[in-house]
Image (tube, rainbow, N blue to C red; front, side, top):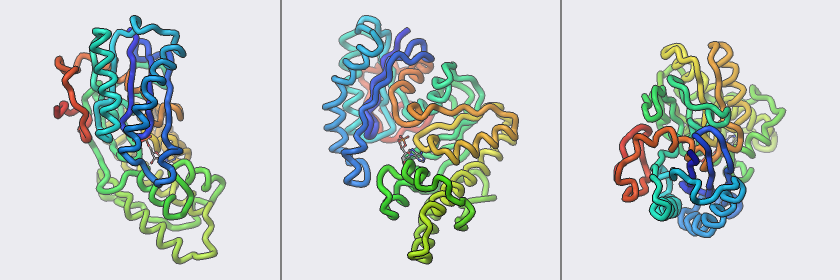
Length: 336
Ligand code: KG4
């Protein structure tokens, strides 16, 4: 079964073809980072226009790269939410038109759920349950216990900013560029993560994350240090604070659920100090850590196709009538 995946929830247009939910035949991404860089963030209206320009040429390129013909497509999976409504509608409308024309099923996919499936896809494996999932991105930080393709128990969420948002805001404040995560990681390479004392927000306060206090703490250090500021050590210290904040809650959950698999996903899962911390934690608990490859960490349609394949049974019968949704709880019904 070949699934065509389409993703356009934010600033990446992506089209992929995946066989049986585990084999990526082609996965192409057209990134808009350069366009949004000068605004310091994603401008939804600009993003929608760029998705519209990119999507059909990308579809043709992906078909060629996968050596597929349209008659080979068995079903279409598309991100229906959560995300920016204008951008989502471009991918969803394209998917609906194709599904109608090719007379194949359309599967609306929850983008956040798909990020977790990406880790199994990276290993060429089907999702294996139960597992503990940590989703870390520009808009999310969720710790969930997963018992089935769409069965999630939310353990912890952030009270304020998501980690990617923190990195993006700090990078903007420090004039390091956009997006913040990769540039903070690069700047912090070889730096001393203990040089600056940053808080570990919500440490010892149970299942809850908070990152906005870290942003304030970084700003205070910048003010206090003035010309003495060592940017490399500051970026290393910030990443260490984020990694340790996640580690405390993940460790609690590993102890409580006795999960033997830990999956980390989302754009911030590309962060090396965080990956290393999670690996140490998994090793200490004799758990297996599954991480997506860097390509599968950021928004991509391969994970949408794979997740669509494994959740096809739960797709609504009237899927050609579904709408895009800005917010959509993991495992929750479509609010169409
Ligand atoms: O999942 P994603 O591509 O988009 C959504 O948020 O939906 O994540 C983007 C976020 C950005 O905030 C970016 O700064 C962050 O992921 N990011 C990173 C790294 N690469 C991307 N954060 C830390 N370290 C990285 N290497």
